[in-house]
Amino acid sequence: MTGSDVLKKINESRTPEDVFVKWNRRENDFADYDLIDRFVENLSAGEEIGEVYFLTMDEMWREIKRLTGERTRIIKTAAGDNVEWRHEGKSGETTQTCPYTPDTLMTIFDVETRGDAIG
Image (cartoon, rainbow, N blue to C red; front, side, top):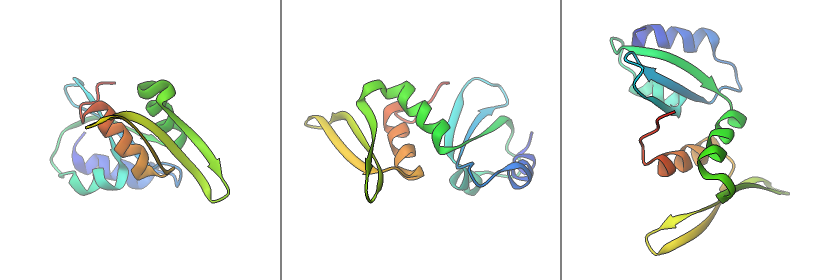
């Protein structure tokens, strides 16, 4: 499908819970993930896309957990949910606590996959 077809699918099928997109190139040789809004901004009308799937926060969280295992967890606070994330930093292992938001999950995903998601 073309970028125009994908945009039409997003406009017709996206629900309010859908925040992320998982997409494959036409060759189906890799999958990538992105925030839907950022994906749409970078999509060109003639671009060839194989498949597009929408993901909710919960579905993306499951992908994060698949990648990170016990190095991530959700912490419930009175102010809202946060993500605690242990990962290798420049000076060794570091722990970050960030709000449980789409941007946080996408950042964790991008760092963990080094921008090269496969599945």
